[in-house]
Length: 365
Ligand SMILES: *Cc1c(COP(=O)(O)O)cnc(C)c1O
Image (cartoon, rainbow, N blue to C red; front, side):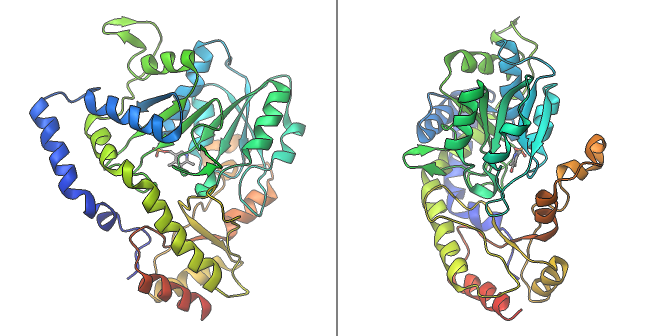
């Protein structure tokens, strides 16, 4: 059986270091917002090339808190419109809603699955104040174009970098390509913790100051509250585990890419559309997503051959029950993608034999 993602195997090389960290934290007896959170924040900010990293509870909170911080700073107001991709994991859209802002959905490019910058301008109104760019599947959104549009219309740009740790445009990494970026360290992400965890990166002094308070009851000084904050702190132990794994992220992303190179050159089947990649570091392949017209048949066939696949994602946000106000809207490209995508097994710990087997079975389909 070839697993879609073997989280046990992925974390196996780090077990001894995790246990050592765990013992250190136990010995210190300081379990919330301690030295490990500070150290990870400093390491991850440096990794992304950003001035600040604010550790939070998860990726969704990271995005919600960015929006709430801009509201506190008066740069956004409740009811303002935010451009978001129609084709994204629903968290991106939920974050906008949870901050009492209004998501305005924009179709992707079929080639990259990412937000189509050419369709943004027509959706901008006097209420539009921000663009949320999502680096879907690990591939950077077209940030040069998005930032140019934002500059022209005086909009904030926020990155949903939950799937793109380490993706880079030249020297500049995800997390440093906009005003502020949200990361998730959910266990299955390229940099994954052993539970829930997230972070925000930014170069903005004022924003960072508000965010450090917002995640901790809106308090900078204990028992003195400046904002209506939340409890969404990065867990001390998760921070310690992430510090163990961060130095290996680039190597793990490279391992993903060498598998992807084989998939892209060796999978040869007219029924399958392979993902677009320009070969640069702008993609860290969180997921390797193919498209095929009769997805169910292909998924069943792969399952019969002991290959596990997943669908990211089966139902587009605008067709979810939770967002019934949008159920009658039509986003044909987004809908086509949701009907046809299938994610193949991909992880830094897959063996050459496993990769070869997946290729062989796909070519026989
Ligand atoms: C995982 C993910 C999130 C949410 O992260 P959590 O840590 O699960 O809250 C947000 N956006 C995208 C694109 C994701 O893949």
